[in-house]
Amino acid sequence: MRTIALEVKNIQKTFSVDGGKIDAVADVSFQVRAGEFVALVGPSGSGKTTLLSILAALLTASSGEVLVDGQDLARMKERQRVELRRKKIGFTFQTNNLIPYLTALENVEFMLRLNGLDGREGRKRSKDLLKRLGLGDRLNNLPGQMSGGQQQRVAIARALIHNPAVVLADEPTASLDTQHAFQVVEAFAKLVHEDGHAGVMVTHDLRMCRYVDRVLQMLDGKLVREYKNRKDIDRLAEKGV
Amino acid sequence: MSISFYLAFKELWRNRGRFFLISLVIALISLLVLFNAALGEGLGTNNRQYIANLDAQLIVFLDKADYLISSSRLDQADLRAVRRIEGVADAGPISTSNTAILLNNDEVLKVSLLGVEAGRPGLPQVVEGFPLRTDQAKETVIDRNVALRSDIQVGDEITIRSTQGPEDEFYVLKVVGLTEGQAYFFQPTIFVTPSIWELVRPKSEVELNKTIPDINVIAVKLNDPTQTKAVGERLTTLVTNTRTADITTTINNIPGYTAQQGTIQTMGIFTLLIGILVIGGFFQIQVLQKVPQIGMLKAIGSSNEVVGGAAVIQIMIVTALGVAIGGIFTFILSLVFPPTVPLIFNGSASVLAILGLLVIGPMGGLVSVLYAVLIEPLKALRLSQ
Image (cartoon, rainbow over all chains, first blue to last red; front, side):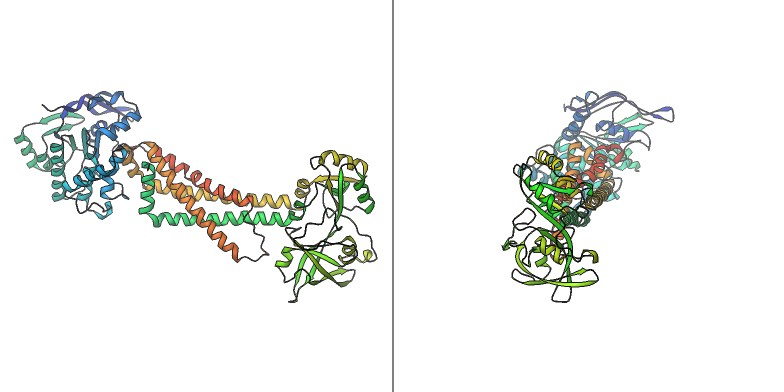
């Protein structure tokens, strides 16, 4: 049985708006095991991104527990949360993923530098990972010299290079065409499975669910449905966007 | 290499054209500040140099002259009395005026004409030739600045023109010595003995038959240079109608000196303030453009120290490069300026200006660094509700 890398227990996030209160995330609980790839789907405003921000230790939950590799985020001070993000979490965003003045290789290596793991071995690992993602001929290209899909793959490499327990992806295919979107998510899923990370991907595009092991559907801040069965997931993916 | 330095260096190198342009703007500010400082030093020096370099610790003025050298009038009896005061090693008269040296190209060189006694305080050391020797000889010691602005050398004869009464009179003086660093009242100086000074100085009609020179002030050298206050008090008690001042007080009372230095310093401060605003503005725009990128850096685990440190290192490198380029520009430009432009780059003012310039970069960028540190990754990445 694979270990639980991410555990969410009765998470609640309440925002005060115009004197009233809105539950952006309401009583959400789930677990993600190492090597498991989970999609978080739902319409705009359903609370996916808020939940992802809480999982990434960028936002504090109003109540409930989030355990990343066994560490409770709620008990951490800001400095510890920064350290956790650096060591235990990998993150890719919709846009602005890469440092524009670093090459693909340097962007990936940067994560190792942050963790004090750079050096010859780190460089070799970074190159190997980029090659696995089909970017062997783009190592020394700056982000501006690469396509959106290539940039996303570099971001995935950076999110995984330091071997984090949890990898989070916020709409990684939002700015990509269909062909590149499939390539990116397929590559992401492959690495999550092969290297044993717990992956959580927020997406609007249900077609991308064909690469995940489980789908969590959110509505109005709540988890309303969970798809575990492969057939159900594939049926959902076939429905498309 | 620290992560901050790595980020700062990589960004500088990959965007070197943009950062070089910012450095050039800082270089232009540096040029302005350094020229301002050099001009202040040069003007100040031209105004005070002779007094500052006097081999004396006290200056004796007429009591009601308000420390103004040109207004002070003393006589030979005062001079003799001063020399008798206990604690006074020597005293020499200084008489001030102006004259014009006729040059070979039909132009004139305006100079300060100072009457000083041979071998007494007031006559500076010569670096070439001989000092003034006898009172009646029509000899002069000239400042090197006079030589630089003309072709006059030791051994030459110079002709000076002075308006005496209704006539222009011409006198020939032999240059016997050369001295250095003796500008007085913005002009290079020539030194003559008191008798020759009285003979050749510009005079009004009523002064034409005057033969005994007026003394403006007396330069006093003390046996113990630390006893300026005690000897000064003794001197003013025993020599009536006199007042004494140390060299600093004398310089600060040179007409316009304090106001001039204040003006130059104010200009310098304003230029530095403009520099702070310009550099601050550049780096603030830079940070504003990088908000999402800084947010991403923080989201993936970069600490505030890393982000803020990178910004500070960048500002320091760009500023140092700008100041260095500005310093080189200034040096090259200073080589083409004629000696009539009072620019002095080796003064403490230039060093202070350079230090000031190196400080204004980080000061100007302080707001942008704080802004970078305070960026919230959620908002920067537009993940917040």
